[in-house]
Each structure stands twice: as C-alpha cells, then as structure tokens.
Figure 1 (tube, each protein chain N blue to C red):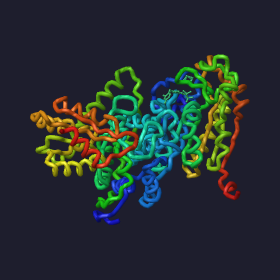
Figure 2 (cartoon, protein in one colour):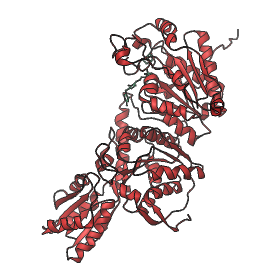
Figure 3 (cartoon, protein in one colour):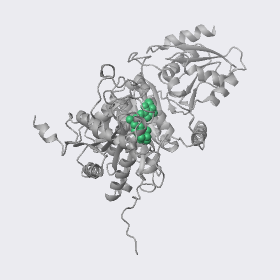
Figure 4 (cartoon, each protein chain N blue to C red):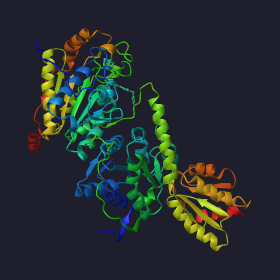
Length: 255
Length: 355
Ligand SMILES: Cc1ncc(C[n+]2csc(CCOP(=O)(O)OP(=O)(O)O)c2C)c(N)n1
Ligand code: SF4
C-alpha cells in the first residue's frame, strides 16, 4: 500500500536539532516562519536579523541569509539593510529584553519611521538566555531571579505592552498580538504572520507581530503549565488582538 | 563640481563629498558638534545619487545601521565626535568581530565627559588601542589637510572592504571647520555586492560574531583576526618626514598640530636649529619602523631630542616611546581640554628645551 505524506518538514528549516527547551515558543514560532518562507517562495530573498537572547542561533535553524545584531540593535540593522537593499525581505526577530529594554529606542524609532520591515517579538515575560531575570514584560507579582518576591510595581514599575505602545505612533502599518497555546492559535498566528510578511512584500510599511511565548525553563513550569499560564495570566494583561490593520497614516494626515 | 577641478570646501563637507565619490551609498548619523556639516551635506547629497541617508535615533543606532548596510555589502559610513564615538564602541567591536567593513569619522572634541566643542586629540588611545571589548584594531588614518581628508576618505572604503575591517578617520575639530582648496577625485560607481555579504545572490551568508562551539572556534577566529591585522600592519602603514634627514631634533605630531609644527620647523631652522617633523598618517598601524629608523640615526648624536606635540596627555607619546625604545630623549608638549596651541608656544618650548 502506498503511503501518503501528510506532513513534511519544510526545507527552509535545517536538520540541526534545535537547542530550545521543550515547550519553548521560539521553536514553534521559527517553524511557522520557516514554513511561510517556503510557502511564499522567499528563501533566496530573505535577510534575517537575529537578536541577542535565546534566539541568537536562529541561523542554525532557518536556512536564510542572517546577520546577528548586538543586543537590542536589530531594528537599526534591519532599517539599514532594507533601505540599502530594498529588493530583499527583511525580518527582525527579537525577545522582550532585546526589543523593549536595551533596544526600546531602536524599536520605537524604526516603527516611527515606518520602515518597511517585519518585526517579530517573542514576549516570554522573562530573560531566557541569561537565566530568568526580570524583563520589561514581567507581570506584577511574577517571580524571577531578580524579583525573588515577585515584581513590585513600586520599585520595578509596570510591565510594558509593546503593541499598545507602538499603536500610539502614526507610522506603523500593522500591529497584532498572537499566542501559540492551541492548534487553533497556531493556525491563527500563522495567518497573522503571513499578513505581516505580505505587507512588506507589498511595500506597505512597518508590521509588528507579538507572540506570547512560554519559557517553561525559567518560569519553572512544565510545558503544559506554561501554556496555561500564557492563557490565563499573560492574556489578561496582554490581550490577544489586532491593534492595527492597514495603517492610519491617511486619517492622521487629515488632523 | 567637476572632477579634479580645484574647489574651496570645508573639511566636514569634503569628507561627505569624497565619500559619495568613493561609492558610499549609506550614511547614518546623529548630530553632534563639530561635525554637523557631514550629516547635513549627506542628507541632501546622497538622495541625488540614489543613496540612503538616515538621521539615526542615537550613535548606538548609527553604528548598527552602518553594520547592517555594510553586512549587506553596501559602502556605508557614520561620523561623530568624541562622546558619540564612545557610545559606538560596542557596535565597532561587533563589526570587527563579524569582519564587516565600516568607515567611521571621529572629529574629536575636548573631553572627558561632555567636555567642550573645541578641537582635541584626546581620543588617540581609544582609537588606536581598542575602545570596545575584545582583541581587535581599527585601521586609523589621521589627515592633516583638507586635501588629505579627501584622499583618505576616497581610499578608506577600499581599505575597509579589502580587509573587512572597520576604518576610522581621526581628526581634531579644526580639520572639520577649515576651508581649503582641494581637487576632488572622480565619481566612482558603487562596487558590486561582495560574495561574503548578505543577499549576494550566490551563496548563503551568515554574518555573526558569536562563536560558542566548544571546538575552540573563538580562539581560531581570534588567530585569524590577528593574522589579518599583521598583514594590515605591513600593507597600510604610512608616514611623512619633513626635513628629518639631517635633523637633530624631531617633532612627532599628527593632524592640526603637525601643520603648526611644519611652520615651527621652518622658523627654528632659520635660527640655525636642525629640526624636522615626523608625521604618522596612519596611527594604527603606527609607523614604528620608520620612526625607529629615524631615532636610531638620531641616537648617534647624544644631544638629539624628540618632541611629541599633541592636544592630549601623552597619548601619541606612548607609541613614540615604543618606537624610540629609549634611545633618544623625549620631551612632551601637551595641550589639554580642547585647547589648541599656536606656533609661538611650540617654538618657545623647543628653544627652551634644547638650550
Ligand atoms: C550589551 C549586553 N548586555 C547584556 C547582555 C546579556 N544578555 C544576553 S541575552 C539577554 C536577555 C535576553 O532576554 P530576551 O531578550 O527576553 O530574550 P530571550 O532569551 O528570553 O528569548 C541579556 C541581558 C548582552 N549580551 N549584551
Ligand atoms: S530558556 Fe526559555 S526562552 Fe530560552 S530556550 Fe529555554 S524555554 Fe526557550
């Protein structure tokens, strides 16, 4: 009996075994990205900017041209790459420490210039790579290695909501937050990422996709509990929704 | 302006025009005095030739934009002055580690801290001995006339791309502000995207500075970098000697102090003193061999002396001492805090010292 192939790993993913921990959202997100790159025929034309953080080895898994940025500077690099080589598809992939703490200026200014790039933001509410310290997105009361009694807003302030923050700017074209905790969520996230990719191909401008992501290792949870925590705790503060589709530049310029 | 025709142009604008003619198609910078004419000129000039100008949000962003553009094989540069260059050091280290080219102009001003906006040479050690983390060196050129700025900038992109190493042009603030007649070299087409660059269309490119693998990858990479730097030491080093052949006294100086020194050399020779000027044109690599040969000859006369004239505290002097190896007495003439000196100051200093 002939066997039917129902699922095949995309050739855009290398055969290298990912170093991500079990249940880590980086691996699933990168798989989706790689599938989209294949489906959209972008492999030869893509330039990734990898962050400093757990995803620094992105180029080991996704078989596209990649440059490794300094911590937080990926949007600046992506800006220059896209501007000087506009025929390429440029993706900046970043964690929360990278994008919202050390690199918050680069994040806001690339968005504010409306750079025609796609930014993928992995929000796991913690510093993964350095071993679980507080991130700008760490929730109030969340225990990390540097907030051992839980994040206290009086001394550590409140978590920053990236989508909401960028949504105050005029220039961005597309802003959406997704999660990956169920199959339906994954299918939805893939559609959102596809849109964010297509926007760049169509020259629409800055597209931002935030992925609520589990870091079971540093959250000290099983992957299943981490999923539950994303669904129950993270979405409460970080609602899953589209913040902006198709830009607001036209309306804003009427003001 | 036509090719090779003499034009009167300010140092900062000459940098920008020479870069465009050398095929620079990306400029990324953040305003800081005394070099603002560079971004201002680039903002109107680059779009005329299909290039990209971005006023970055900070020098952190500027240098990383340069890193992005050059990683993608495009000739790109930034310019700044001392505090801004300090902010760029992490990025410069990444560029050196990842072996991408870059051209960085430092129009030095007085420090430390916010200091002042007057000309200075106090970033010599930062430029030549590191600045950022890790074992690397910048190739550092130190022009002393506007024409030399033009020639050096025009060549800098070739050097940076040839060796895949960042190049710095180090000048004191006066160099950016003076206007001089220069002949501008012809407009060159931007070079093709090199095979190692992102989006080269031939092979997959991964540009990175992280080398975690346990098989001594980072040690091997460092060895490779050092071999490259050794080659650069031999091939790029440049210096000028002015009236040094019979000199008993030699002043070592670069940039504006070197120009002032030339006048002082002539004036002292009129008084019967055999004085010369040794001027490093590259300060990394430093012309140790040329200065050593000169000081070896001078050491035969026990009353000979070397003067180091700089707008910094014994920074250039450290390299001079390494070249001279204690064979000739050294006297230092330092002006600190963004204070330039005039001819009389140096003239009197040397006369007093050789009595
Ligand atoms: C300038 C600098 N500061 C600090 C670090 C150390 N560092 C590496 S990754 C990281 C944080 C990573 O957290 P995040 O961006 O949230 O990514 P994750 O690992 O969670 O995916 C830090 C602080 C560094 N590499 N460079
Ligand atoms: S530490 Fe966290 S973010 Fe890093 S790989 Fe493990 S689960 Fe993923």
